[in-house]
Length: 162
Picture 1 (cartoon, rainbow, N blue to C red):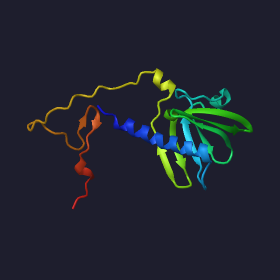
Picture 2: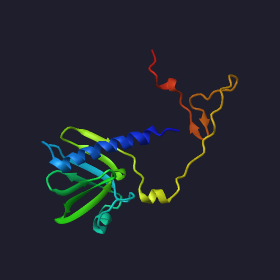
Picture 3: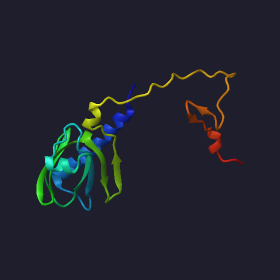
Picture 4: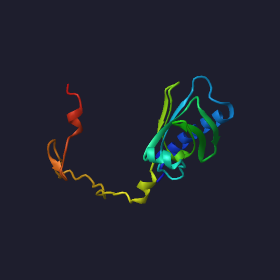
């Protein structure tokens, strides 16, 4: 099966990589600035223990006026920022980014991210029954019936009545 969802997310992460690469070379143009949210527990993220303790799940950084040494590679970016007047160096793989927002042009991207804790635990999945061929004599559930404990609501109940 072709995973278009993953391919699309990788392509959109390429937009971030391209934009950050340009900013690393020429600086921020005009009023552009970025809010980048990332999962601190995602594989490959490197932040100080102090930052990780303060933001154990995710954090948002702002690249606007006070950042330095922005380095961009194919897989990650690194940047210097100050937190409570303490300089920090962050190493953030693009795969750890959950959100990217440039408020100067109202451009926003959101991504699905698995963090390291989630990857260690197997995901619980429920086996779905195989689709059945329609049997014209089989009674179809009506509004209010229950199937496996869930109430059935038909699409007709949401359509506008004339």
